[in-house]
Length: 165
Image (cartoon, rainbow, N blue to C red; front, top):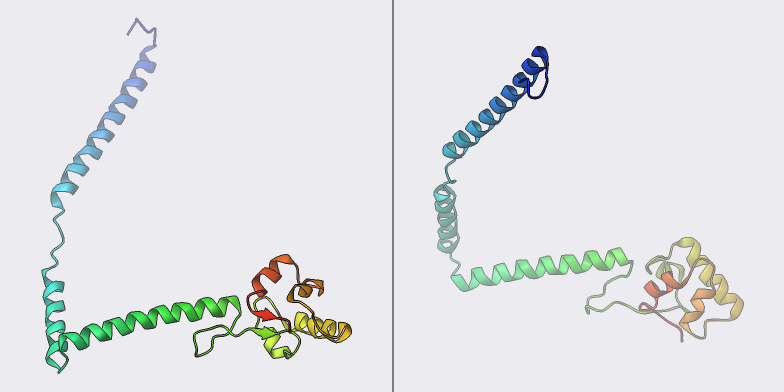
């Protein structure tokens, strides 16, 4: 150790640190070996047999395979419809039974109809009605941007749901 010119106590500290590092890596390596040998793949046979039993029970209760397939297809359709209802509700429009969004005439719409539009609350609905009364109606739907509180972004959300006649 005279090559590096360490004192006797410095040499002991360095050897101690090196021995701690080597023992730490040895323990970590040993734990990885033991952990990998103890793990066994999960056995799905119990859940598979339970699934088969329940499937047979459904088919034995008077439903044939075609009826079961129809039920599954109907459930998927219901999930898709729910997704559509949620999206339309978030956008603020309402949904009719004919699967089309109602288009509102802003010259004849009442306050409740206006509130159902995306981004329109009571205050802006009142402003639309006031503007409509002052100007004797809207000539085109773009005039909505003249109403205080309706800018380009809000109008872009509204334009598919309104008309001016």
